[in-house]
Amino acid sequence: MKSENKNIILLNKKEGETPLSALSLFRDKHKIYKDIPMTYAGRLDPMASGLLIILAGEECKNKEKYLNLDKEYEFEILFGFQTDTYDILGKITKTHMKPTCQTCGVKKN
Image (cartoon, rainbow, N blue to C red; front, side, top):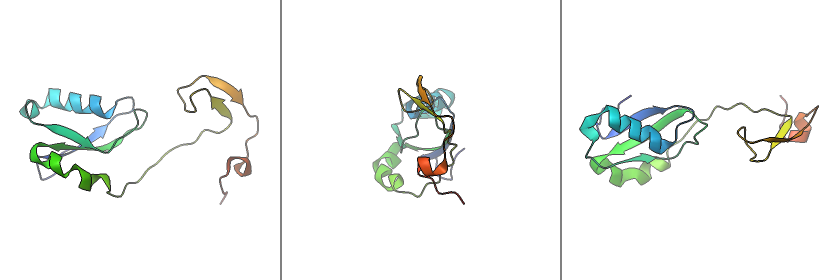
């Protein structure tokens, strides 16, 4: 997805990609950007999917202004287990049969 400004690219980063790999794939598909300096403004975890702001050319100098933009997040939480890496990618080290919202520190509506 592109914005009106060809130096600001809104890229849909897929789950499993790093921001750098997403940028590299974009460059491979769009040869016009081959020799133009590019960077991403903000970072998405490799397990996350979402909008990644890519800056090109002179717009790279304005990266700081994009880092403070408002963001929205959607996520799912899986209760009842613990892993050695504290994320979904780790080896399960402990399970909890009946997690409660009070135990997890989440307020129930």
